[in-house]
Image (cartoon, rainbow, N blue to C red; front, side, top):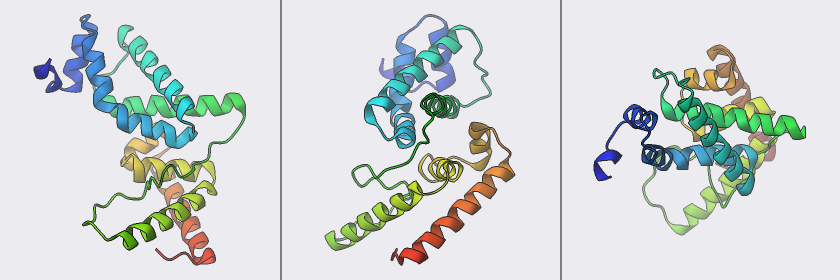
Length: 193
């Protein structure tokens, strides 16, 4: 089993298609953290995120068994796109828009790694992060999604445009408006970053 962990996603998919079910387990374990967190940030409910995550892998298994998976796609990006679509489908069913809420101080903007700071700096960063998350919650849905996909999932705009089914220019425009609106709210509320 140790050697299987070193296999690429494509090799694991090929093994799964040959009937080796453990290959799917390795794929799930390899990508579950990023995919689950991305789903959770959209639905902001742990149990709902778990349900959607399970539905996601059922859909992936069905697609792989039907031979409909295109190998030029990167597995994780493809899975995240399916997860996003399942979240959108859920909210369409209940006719409710998703919002993002702070989860135990999780900061989606914490992309850069900093040297260890003292307790006072950590508290200040956490408070700023919480304030920014509250502001992100106030953004229109399209702008919220683009912030999550770019700053949390660390996706490129080309990948985001595929997930959101829009052009790269549209994704860039949404990001521009999202950042403009965030800056405006930060200035209005006089939040120190």
